[in-house]
Image (cartoon, rainbow, N blue to C red):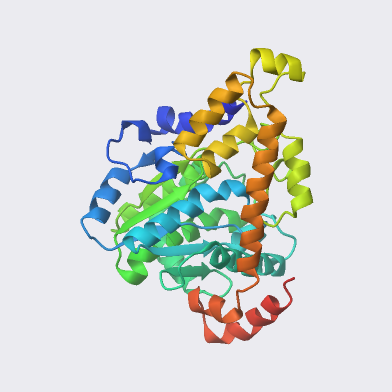
Amino acid sequence: MQEDILEENRRLVEEFQATPFSQLKDLPEFYTFQKGLFYSHRNFDTFYEKLKSGEKSAIVSGLNPSGTLQLAHRIVFDTVLFFQKKFKVKTIVPLSDDESYVAKKVVKREDAVRHGIELIVDLLAYGYDKKLTKVSFDFVYPEIFNIAINLSRYVTLSEIKAVYGYPNDQNIGLHFYPVVQAAHVLLPEIKYGIKNTLVPIGPDEDAHLRLGRDIAERAGYSKPAIIHARFLPGMDGLKMSKSRPDAAIFLHDAPEIVEKKIKKAFSGGRDTVEEHRKYGGNPDVDIPYLYLSSFFLNDEETKGIREEYIHGKILSGELKKMLIEKVNDFNQNFKKRREKIRFSDIKAVLLTEESKLDELEKIFNNIE
């Protein structure tokens, strides 16, 4: 199952000329790179070389305000925090409430706005540096559309159709939105003059960024570098989907919900305790082991637990219990930090017009 999920990552390398991270010798000393949680890249080596040389750099890492944060988001979030803390990298976070609406991910645009405010609270609670982070919330930062209009001259409708396959009867908002997304990724250079930019994405978002890089080159801007996170499966071992929310662990999940989801997780254990003790389990397909080794255990701990699981000294139920404890501890700490966020913190990171702040504060005050 995990091999099937990796197929999208491999396809980027084989069909769309992305470069595997395995070919890079100079990687950041951070767990997401050391554990292979990023699969491939476009020009990351150039970005990293310039970053280490002291060139002013930025990260663009957007979110779609139609849902909430999952544990798998840690790959990108922790990486952003690493670059913020070590290199003081400026971070732009586009919140595309407009795309959520035109793509019908939300019924009303007001829903996307509310989700967007909640996501800003989440980012600040997660630890994003207020001095280094700017949130480009399309609802309150209309300048993004002026930038998009300027960039629209550098892409044709034929290209949009070729990349996305939109039929003629699809709403025009979806046809135009790729230019808005190009404006997002070029914002560091256009607004702040920062040419060395990194965009961490999932492999399913690569088409957007390939087009964005083409637009950047035609318009005379620098191409942003891209890193592709590995797809992590849901608790059932399949690719995560909004149609199966029970397969994902959310940072807002209560302890009893976390326990319920993880207890149902796909296991590499044997059918009985006796068989498991005798023949051992398979950590390569075990979802709790995957999440533990990816986010909660160091290399030495991972190696030890792997050996004990293979030789039947640890049961699958014990792995699940370990993951439940780790996730609940992480989520509860996140919740405590979230409760301390005030609207003044949101104002500190928002790119916005003053006239919108009263409306946003009312929305913030109604968040549970």
